[in-house]
Image 1 (spheres, rainbow, N blue to C red):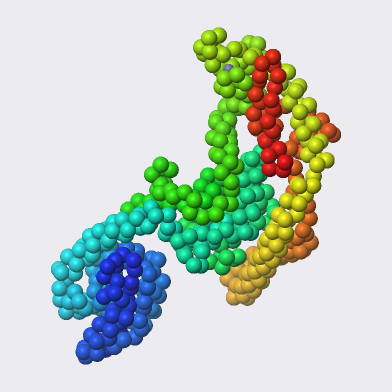
Image 2: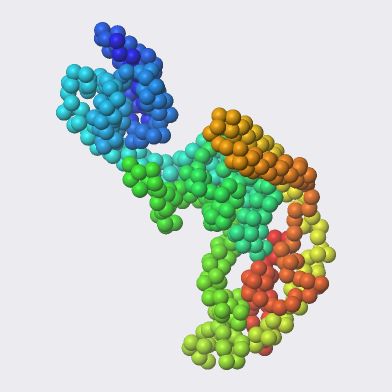
Length: 519
Ligand SMILES: [Zn+2]
């Protein structure tokens, strides 16, 4: 008697055949076949529901079956047809022609009339796997087609709502605001406008213990969420996460889909779609960020990208480039090296007929900006109320997340301690069994003891950490020492000044970045 594994599989790529391919139907056919055969008995059923036939390694039940095969629990596999085993020609053939024969596994695909023991229909099997492959290619196109129609209607067609939203339980193609995450989104936008860089926003959120979006989805929203990119992620907020959020139109209420595309129906890899080819439908859900703020951020993103292109040496002298504008024509002003100042770019290019020079010396700019920043800082420090209220709300979220993070960190350390305990025991056994000598043993023990001590110390430190406390800082403060700004640098300007407009008779309009979110 052959102990047979019944293998069933159903997935989206079965397209219109889904009902005839249903798991029940597959099982029924297999049972009937086994009952009629004299040398087969059903040992176990392995059912991968919702898994594509393109891949083998990600199917849990297929993997469990292979494990049972290697452990000798099963002598054969029976499927309704070859496509249930797999839809990818090369790998499916590889299993049927190489793997199964080499480990003595009998393979039966009922409807294809294949039974490896009778060598029946082996040529047909080859043809069949090739056919299945072509079929899958076709279906994958069809699925893409119907998905696109849905997306053009503004229906959300993916598994998980973006961070800041949750799926509407009444209509899973729409979003509702997730208040807690939405507040973090708002904070990210406002920090960026305040002058924080993307990297420093990520750093700040990490320090505050705010769960990163994927963790939040798993832990707070209780979603079974995984993210392909996450494997390589350091854990915590990163520059790309912040960048992605700042650019995402979903936060002004637009549905943005078709941002990535599978490179091929075979490869589990994606390419980015340029924005003009993405499927965007406006105003499908409530906005988290108002349009005005969003537009400001987009401009700033562009401008800062440009700013960072300025080579390092020249930034010292040119620190107003990209920030200073002509008040008459609105063009940027360019550097006049010889006279150590700036003049209108339009005038510089086309002369008197178009605009005037509006030349201004850098030393004057430095002087005025220094005074202005100091003045602004003073009002900001004194004003405070609005800033406080906004801060307290935010603080609540931070504290909650901090306490979750703290618990998690403590648990991890305790796990590490247990592991070391195990190693210690193992080393002792090795010593007893003369696998290692006394000297080695002593060295290992010393190593482990030291590690233990360090972890203990860390545990104490984490325990002592406060889950509350002042978390907000006014970013510009760090430029000021003893009430003085020592020197105007590119860094200060980028962080604090939005733009400087040079008007007639050298009067200046100075627009600060930190004004908008607090005032
Ligand atoms: Zn001009």
